Structure formats: structure tokens, C-alpha cells
Image: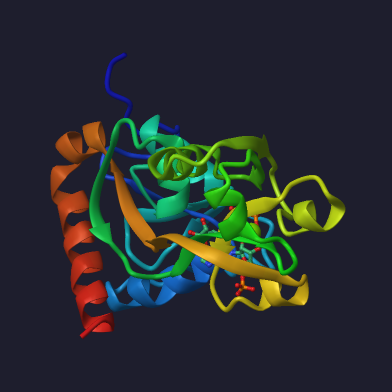
Length: 229
Ligand code: PRT
Ligand code: MG
């Protein structure tokens, strides 16, 4: 397959398209954008627009589902984007240049079980464990590394419900405060890895729109450094 670069009839040669998802990625990206001198001209929570202009000429934001950010950037629907490391690991990262850990939207990927399930004993005894998760790729790798036998059940949301209903013994999910687990009588039994959001860039765009993209990446880098002294 050849290189994919953002086209779009309204996008001129130097138009840069940044893909963000609504919610915490958008909210946590705003201060970085602001530090880079970019204000988004519309609030995604009140506007129904999916393409948002910014105060920086030639830079626009497109709003996509968090799981779709790598796909948009990979195929050139956007030149760059902000995506959780969890999403990138599941996507595979093909065609994406990942220059920067933005250190925003931080959390961890963990294994959790019902408080009355003895995970350590199940592992010790070599039992087959049923694990529900949206992160099948990361989960498969984690349990294979540990030599634990698992049956993975793919879910798209509300993983916390799976152990409560008997659908699964364990879940692999993101945890930040731990409040969701606690509210559902689940306990974290293993940290798989820390997670944060990354800047991802279309590799072909990086060649064809080198100057403006480099300037943006540098601005993100300085803003991230300033945020994390
Ligand atoms: O929500 P939607 O289905 O639209 O999409 P999404 O879940 O893919 O997007 P979003 O916006 O919820 O998450 C985007 C990114 O934020 C993720 O890919 C992560 O990289 C990052 N992130 C950081 C988190 C969390 N923290 C987080 N706590 N994503 C999800 N959660 C969820 C978690 O899945 C669990 O349900 O929050 C709950 C736990 O939170 P605590 O604080 O109760 O522990
Ligand atoms: Mg979510």
C-alpha cells in the first residue's frame, strides 16, 4: 500500500488536521494546545460539529472516537492525533510515527477480580481463568508471559460487570482513581503497565508537510516538558 496523506476537499496543501477524541483526551490536550499557542474555537460538548477550527491558521481539529484516532492518522484522515497507549497497543501502530509521550490522561492497565475470588490461588493451581476485556491483545500477551491459561472474552464496555454476573473470573481494564472498581466490589490484583496518551503522526504526512508538522511536534514537546518539570 502507498502512503496515505490527509486529502479532504477543504484541506489545502498546508492544512494540518489533528484528531482528538471527546472527553478526557480532548480536555487534557487543551492545555498543551494552549501552551503551543492554539485555541480550539468551539466546545465539543455543546457543538455538534465534528471539524473544529482553531486560532492557528492552517490547523484544525477533527473529533473521532478514541479507538478510531490511530486509524484516522494511519490512513491520512488526519495528519496527527492524540491516542491512549492502550488504544495504540491494540491497534498495532502500523504506519504511525509516535514521537512523544504527552503524559496526559494517565492511568494503568490492571487485572481485577471480585473481592471473594482468590486470584493468586487460581494462578498457583494453574486453573483456566476466564478474563473479560476490551484489551484482548495486551491481555493475551500479559497472561502468556506469566504462563497463565486464560479464556479471553472480548467486551466493548462495562467490563466491571463481567465478574459480578459470572461472565468472567477477572477483567483487564484501565484504572485511574480505583473508585469504579471499589464501587463494584472488585480488587486490583496485578498492574500490567502504566498508560498515558501519545502523539501519533502519519508517516507520509511527516515527509510532505514536514515544516508545519515539525513545528507542531516541537510545540507539543515544549508544552509537555513545561507541564512535567
Ligand atoms: O468512553 P468511550 O467508549 O467513548 O471511549 P473510550 O473509553 O475509548 O474513551 P475515553 O475518553 O473514556 O478514554 C480515552 C483514553 O483515556 C483511554 O484510551 C485511556 O488511554 C485514557 N484513560 C485515562 C482512561 C482512564 N484514564 C479511565 N479511568 N480511559 C478509561 N478509564 C475508565 C476505565 O475504563 C474504567 O471504566 O474509567 C474507569 C476507571 O476509572 P477510575 O477513576 O474509577 O479508576
Ligand atoms: Mg470510556
